Length: 178
Ligand SMILES: [Fe+2]
Image (cartoon, rainbow, N blue to C red; front, side, top):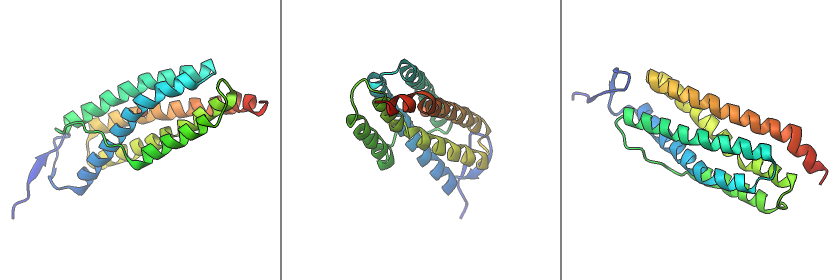
C-alpha cells in the first residue's frame, strides 16, 4: 500500500503517521495549556506578592507569557493545526501545591513571597517541555519552529534565574527574620 505523504513546515516530506510528529503535537498542546494556565495564575501571584521586585519579575513574566502564547499559535498555524490547549494533571498539581503554600503564610510577609516563588515552579515544567519540544523539532527538521522554541526556552530560563536570584539574595534572608 502506498504511504500517505504530508508536506512538513520545513518542506521535507515525512510519513503522515509519523509518531514523533504526533508526540510533538501532543507536547505542543500541553505547553500551550501550561502557558494559558499561567495567564490566569500570574496576576493572582503578583497581587499576593509583597516585594516590589517580585511584583516586577512576575509582571514581566506575564508579558512574556502573552508572547509565548502568540509564538505557540504561530507554530500550530505553521503545522496546519488548530491551537488547542491541554491542561494536564501535572500542571494542576503544581498550581494546587503553590496555592497551599501561599495560604499557609501571612499576608505581606517575606515568607509569603518565598511561597510565591515556590508556586512559580511551573517554570521548571515549561523549561523541560520547551527543551524537549525543541529537540523534537530538530529531529523533525522543523528549522524555523525550532528557532522559535529555542527563543522561548531561553526566556523561560532567564525568568527562572531571576526568580532564583530573588529567592536567594533577598526573600529567604528576610523570611528567616520573621
Ligand atoms: Fe512561558
